[in-house]
Amino acid sequence: MTQARILYVDDEDDIREVAALALELDPGLAVRTCESGTDALAAAADWQPDLILLDVMMPHMDGPTTLARLRDTPATAGIPVVFITARTQASEVEQFKALGALGVLAKPFDPMTLSATIRSYLP
Image 1: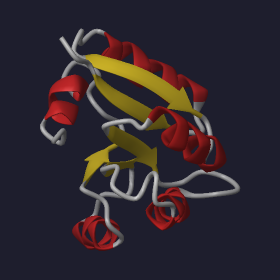
Image 2: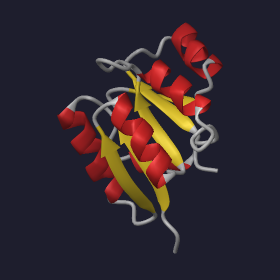
Image 3: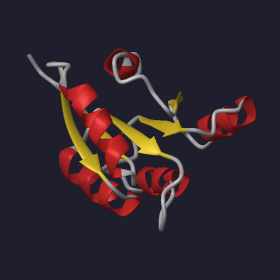
Image 4: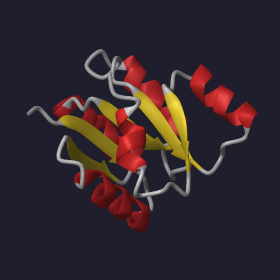
């Protein structure tokens, strides 16, 4: 069975750990995590995940900037990205989708349903 590769990017250690643990319970998912947009660019190019879960608000390089850089790089331009954020008002969600995000997940998320939610975004 081939596992879907999920890259989870979040600057908050606790949230990153909870997300990774929740996703790793699904045997069909292989999970890697990064704590910054810069790390995510390198990991995405190297590992070629099937989906990137990307925090919006991070220091140094926020999620929208990271997404723009992913899209500007041929090796990562086609990787689907779902933002994960507390900023989920309808206008914000539409703005994130206009930037090229496949979807937006609300923080805090439910760890028990996270993998099922993620699977709905997989190609």
